[in-house]
Image 1 (cartoon, rainbow, N blue to C red):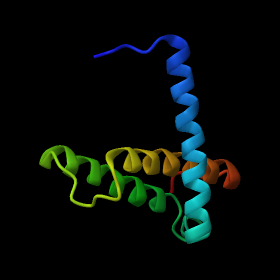
Image 2: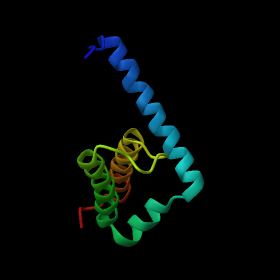
Image 3: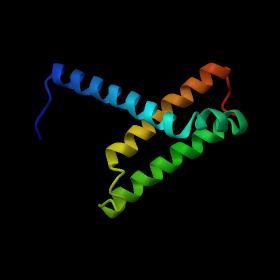
Image 4: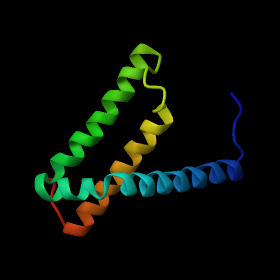
Length: 100
């Protein structure tokens, strides 16, 4: 397997961060700030459920070795997982919230 040089790794990492921002922007345009609304109502449980759903999807893909929903790849699922993690951190900071 080829190994990325340090500058290539940094460039790739930054490209992924930009892609995360774009995915977040598009999904917020489509769904509104649904995560925030649910978080206000249900708290940290909202994050646990969303993150758990994405992890379950990854586990199923890994176990089956294939993807049946062709418009959501492993990469898409990982981007969603990363975005949900960041949105959870925002909620924790915004509300100075506990995990309950």
